[in-house]
Image (cartoon, rainbow, N blue to C red; front, side):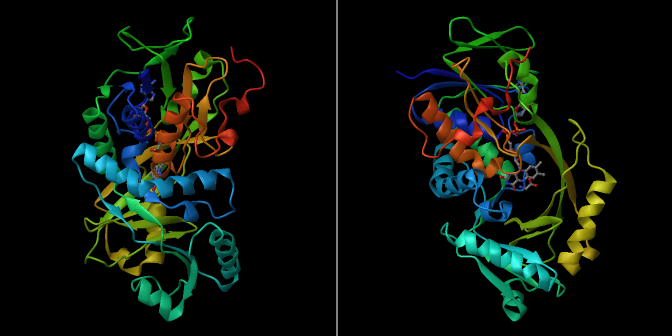
Length: 376
Ligand code: FAD
Ligand code: GLY
């Protein structure tokens, strides 16, 4: 018989986990303090780019990202079918650009290790680069081309996930204000909302993104998760296809969306839980954007926004079960890659709940890795 699972937080991670659990026959309740997708998940650029986001080398985090990219085709199809909603899922490929000959060697080094993971990276330059991406600045010296990287339209994806959850019988209780997790003596999970309403389940999955650190005391765990603000903007492109690929550089990235807009991100600033957009933050992006595409100098972004990435002390998410309170699991701290990681996270947490071994090792992401002594 299915279990009753409480999910704390209705971002992409909470909704994916809820959906995966509902698909396996569990009864699921999502508890959201505001609006589902109203925080980082609705602000994201939607890139599914494990090779571009992990240039340094193939660590366990890269493997998790790659596993999730491979789950995406079937996962997004299921979300569309169950929800009855659609969202953009584009296979534009990506270019990682450099401006100097001396940086070409670094691209070659990346290509060498990434080939071992089934990618087909190519270094492109000169006329070949111009053919691939005609509007790119001639100042760009070379690029590492990844034909396999893709992106989705994150706000629509999150709406579809929410609808897929509802249609699968998930109960979504939103606008609750901050929900507290409380220790339950009988190995059940328990949470209380602002009005004092208590929710009980067989287990509870903490998926509250940048706010996870607030649960340190309740969980008796060091949770070094903190918000890193990403300021981001979008232009209306003058002509369809004027930017063809996702393009990454040392200062940011651009993503051409099917609706004719170009999303350009993103700052990484420490501003607590403030989601304001600042002139300085956006101006830094604009200065870089036209070094990449000179035609952007004539344009003004039509939309500017910001979200709070859930960063952790070591850059890895917290994924697993709490050994001292086995009714509590956590999936938080996905930092720059929560949209990409949503399918693998949902499946892995559902595996843990079903007492199955997840397909990808979670050892490196263990919840207790920061906790040397009990938290009081
Ligand atoms: P959130 O979406 O923040 O959801 C957490 C939810 O928990 C919120 O809705 C919040 O209200 C709720 N909550 C918090 N505390 C409580 C409580 N006590 N009780 C009840 N509810 C609570 N990732 C990619 O993969 N690709 C990208 O291209 C990409 N681009 C990005 C661009 C920007 C500008 C930003 C900011 C992020 C980007 N990311 C990207 C990262 C991605 O958005 C995050 O990793 C992801 O959204 C994290 O999802 P989450 O569900 O953990 O957090
Ligand atoms: N992954 C892109 C960002 O976090 O800005």
